[in-house]
Image (cartoon, rainbow, N blue to C red; front, top):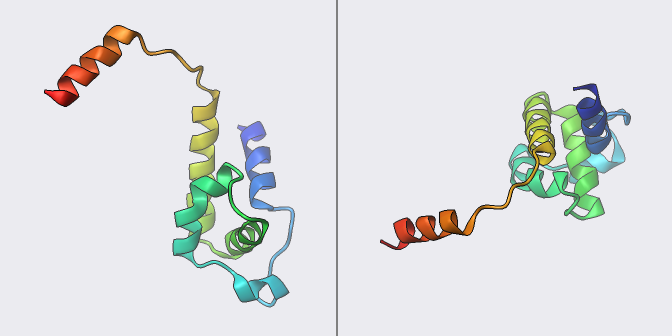
Length: 100
């Protein structure tokens, strides 16, 4: 899991030391904003400003950091699973069930 931990540490910016008095703390996210944007953050789909605010929050919040780490580990593991094509017969059966 060390490769996963390295990826997560880089993603979160754990190499940067944060303190409540940092200038970027003025616009720091709250827990709800971090959790609402976590998936997009992990996928690299948030603005650089939001990235900074999320990283700052994670560097200070003892509740969000482990929650976010767990989510990032889960995403990393799911990304490693080989993708399989769903057979057409299974897709048709699902459509039959869904559409009655």
